[in-house]
Image (cartoon, rainbow over all chains, first blue to last red; front, top):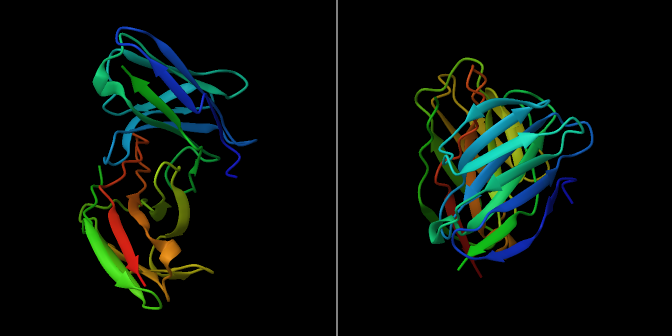
Length: 114
Length: 111
């Protein structure tokens, strides 16, 4: 158990819909990273938050948005869903701002868009 | 932004030592090198991290040459349960704070 909690674990929805994925980082971790992993693909970096502030963006679509709340949990919002958005979405947390620390990953939220 | 290159796949047998090399030619001075293991439908798990020379823990060793343009993850005496994808990650400690994973190496361990 990494200490990172992601909900929901599974989600099935239709094209055009909107979903929200939630991540609770490990206690004390200020950094939250979101990654997308499509079938047989690597981990695509989406966005990074540190202590409530957005610090870096990857190839995140405009239809996607995220935020980190004062209690440090984070939400990834996916709207106008398309079939190609079906993927595993991972959240990872770290105590540090930058890349010298260990990332702790949650078990992911599997999104299926029909 | 440091980019990593790894072999797509490797095969091994139980009990053998496996070495997986990662190239990161444009690694920055402040970057660390971290390796993760991922099983299907699970989140990646930290294996080992280093900055230079050699680091060893209870599951692996990490060798980093002086120029730091590559690194080698060494797994001693692999077992079937070590079959997984292994990712090399070079931490971007610069202004972007992006942590970009490479394509990973699928290690298949056979009996």
